[in-house]
Image 1 (cartoon, protein in one colour):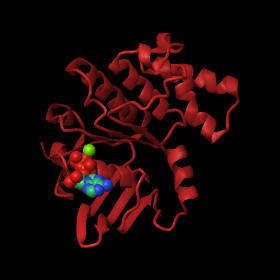
Image 2 (spheres, rainbow, N blue to C red):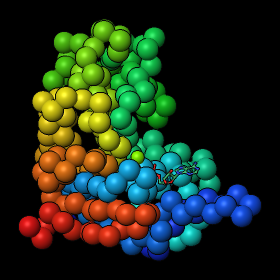
Image 3 (cartoon, rainbow, N blue to C red):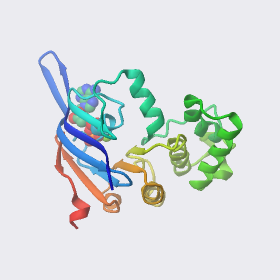
Amino acid sequence: MSIVLETINLSRILQEGDLKVTLVDNINLQLASGEFTAITGPSGSGKSSLLYLLGLLDSPTQGDLLINGQSTTQLSEEERAWIRLNSFGFVFQFHFLLAELTVLENVMVPMRQLGKLTRQVMGKRALELLAAVGIADQSYKRPAQLSGGQRQRVAIARALANDPQFIFADEPTGALDTKNANAVFDLLAGLARDQGKTVAVVTHDENLASKTWRRLRMEDGRLIDNNLNKAA
Ligand SMILES: Nc1ncnc2c1ncn2[C@@H]1O[C@H](COP(=O)(O)OP(=O)(O)O)[C@@H](O)[C@H]1O
Ligand SMILES: [Mg+2]
């Protein structure tokens, strides 16, 4: 497997006057293509902050992030947005679906932003993605008519809209019961296993984390363990 993402002394420090908060502290990390990684650690340890840096949703104050070998620190905000749209799919604890759109239209949103496909092709692709996550029959409903587990499936389908290289999820199962949490986690695992996507999931659920191939652990902004599952 090849290294597709690498951090070099990556840090994110917030400074306001005398107050200094280190969210992410000097992290060196590599992710390989097709790897399924869990990021664990106590609340406030910097898991979300790290994931946002890795996904170009936030910028480091020190260090570098290489994506496919390319440094990202010198990129303009426009270039970063373009990489996010093409290469990253995000899933959050709360789905952030647009209430006024149907499920199908929600999945088409990132495709519209990219602007490469005709409306007909976008609709067909969105249906295929919804079928792949097991909810094609919900395509013409509004998000409010779906269960929490179904909405997270829509969020995963939307994350896949532009066939991204990376899928990053921040507590995607945090609002779900055990059965739905397992199903969503298995879907994410399948994206790495069957499609070769590089998948990283923040979770405080140790049971789910133990199902990944690799488990990172954070404490106080630092990476304190890089490889828990592989050692097992
Ligand atoms: N905008 C902010 N201003 C001040 N502190 C913040 C901000 N964002 C996060 N933090 C703090 O940074 C630390 C790491 O936060 P976070 O990455 O959200 O942790 P986790 O996802 O592991 O719970 C926490 O102590 C949090 O309170
Ligand atoms: Mg968090």
